[in-house]
Image 1 (cartoon, rainbow, N blue to C red):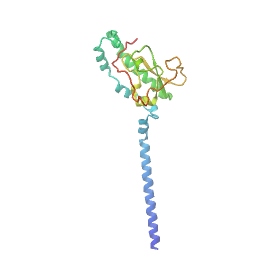
Image 2: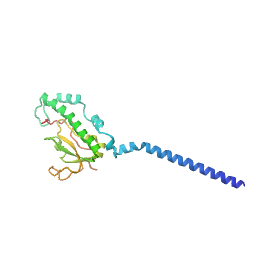
Image 3: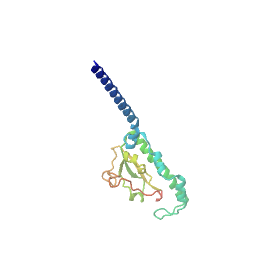
Image 4: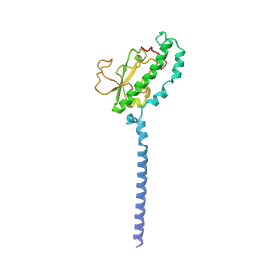
Length: 201
């Protein structure tokens, strides 16, 4: 009889321990689920629909006052051509218009589910030509990790980022096919300093 009671007590304790273990497991799973969005955000997966790169890029780009202060101290562009006050104002305005255009392209791409973007040029850009090839591409995940991949890269930058929907004909570009911008050997993008200046055409 005593052994039967001890057996019931042992069974009862075993059931209690199992219930406690199940509860701990459920609570841990709930906690992991609650943390999942930040894990997704950090990896870049699905973040394309959730987070615009606007705020991050604007933190990394010079402010309007910094640009105007810099321009007030120079009289020639990077090629040595003289800059008038009107040229300098056009350079400053063009820089921020370009930021808006390129970010809008990515925000629209997020709504359309675009995964790849390529670079194009709206005119001659001798500065960017040394760093970026026309039709070179980056993934949305690359942009999530490195918002500095979004043009403009310098004052007077003619480089633009375009959404690749798969239907664009890129055969007339300098690249027969798109190729990666970031590689294992080049994990950080090599881009021009923003102070390099090309006249806005």
